[in-house]
View 1 (cartoon, rainbow, N blue to C red):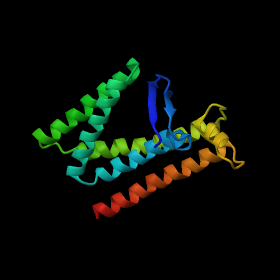
View 2 (tube, helix red, strand yellow):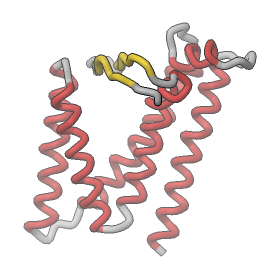
View 3 (tube, rainbow, N blue to C red):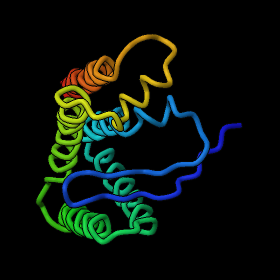
Length: 176
């Protein structure tokens, strides 16, 4: 059994961050930040097609933020968590208490922005500038083939686009 121990999560004000782990499968962990963000964006886009699923997604999002808030080791990440918890909780309360029905649109917006930022981040971090410490470069070191880091960045970008366009297609199909 593979065990992954998260040693620390840090988010920096300059949009950077680092997660330190011990154990696990590196070839799964390295692309997980980029592709995981795109995957969860896809899930939020699909959840926005229904009021009940949007409320469930908002509740899961708040629960995840509370977990990260407990694990956070710096104030930038804590501030982001608290801000999003207040924002999503407020929109959810408006959804329940008033005639304002905007939770679906907020969840859709967060999902689309998550997916688009994942694509941008892959391009910025892995394709446009070559950094020897990037996840793609580390992945290229692990892979037995002769592909360089930018190859993995392009591949991960294509997968991220597939998640985004797949979510758009399925979302439109669910709405019709």
